[in-house]
Length: 355
Length: 202
Image (cartoon, rainbow over all chains, first blue to last red; front, side):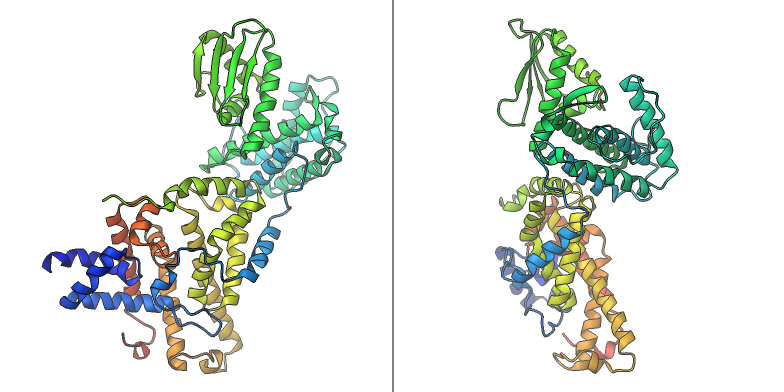
């Protein structure tokens, strides 16, 4: 039995809480019968666990030996009535509920929910540098300005002071000026106020008839110099909200998950369409974006035969490339065929820089 | 040694996916989390509070926090099971402390006999046991995270130490050692009980 001593001693804590696999469980009592030291230690640990178990009160379920917890199942027998109460109360705690919008606006609704969850982690860290020369606060201020363009197109009331940017300023420049205005304005306020402004504008956008009705969202609107169906503009809003949430997450060391697969697919499809326009007379390249469902290969470029190259990209990497978060040389990719043609696609994707 | 294959092996990717859906406001993800871990959360809370009503409150707080602040959970740092279990435990300890303070205020003139009518072995002993139990649970809540995780899996979540090792991605020997260190520390926290005379014998 002397050989057992050290081994059993190591097991006593697991034994005391009832966490021994059957094979080990047999060895312990045999040794305890022979070894006073171990028996004393075992009793001391068991007494501790008995106190952890506690004395059940009048309304507590009997909780006896530690082995009781070993059911393995989810124990759905208790709290059946309470389930609805707990869930209903938990669901009420997140304001506002993600609205029941049409599929084209669902990615934006989700991205807004995701950023709202993220900003709860920001108190005390709003000054963290994020991207460009923006801190976290300025990044949210930028989103107020960025979402405003669609808000204006949809007749949603302005949240920022009126723009002083002269009419006729090129879209890209006007875009930068408006962001600078918004950041200057919001930096004079608290981050919480900026978040409230952004969230209220987002909620207004998601409550527009165009967010709820695909037929209304089919009409074209020019936003930031891009003439697209309103439905696509909603997808672009989702793209930007996610990319900037990801920026903030990276700056703070928080892993921001990619959008749900069905939303990611919507982002990819829109980005491919816009990329296709930019590449209309380039050498044709087959671009495959993996993992976003069937039929996710597109030939981008001219009608010339045959295809000059094949490119394979992960959907998140593809979105980060189009969002300007990857240099064309750095994005992980699979490549076959004419390297120059493939590089041209990557460089064009990165140069869209629409965020 | 080789650990037998069990469901917990897939847990990290399941947690990552569930977390992704929680972050993006998918209500069905909260329902799934509740279906999987609601019973564990209640079990932990009942162990500490000895009250189903309190466990209900704790469960509400825990799942509301998961829903409003999903980034409080980080799948890179541990499983959702241990995170929820530890959160429930901390909230339950807070509940008991609040309750004790409240009782002191409202029953300042009453004897403890009135405050706790549901005696087991005897009113006074029951009170002392409850105080000692709270002391232990407070000590448990203050253990280093690595030790707490093993205790939660092995004690509250009904895992064997081998299963706990797999779920935590640590060697079995480490799981045993952490469990042992944790339990010893808890036993030591009782070495100086508030009322030694009333300490029940083994």
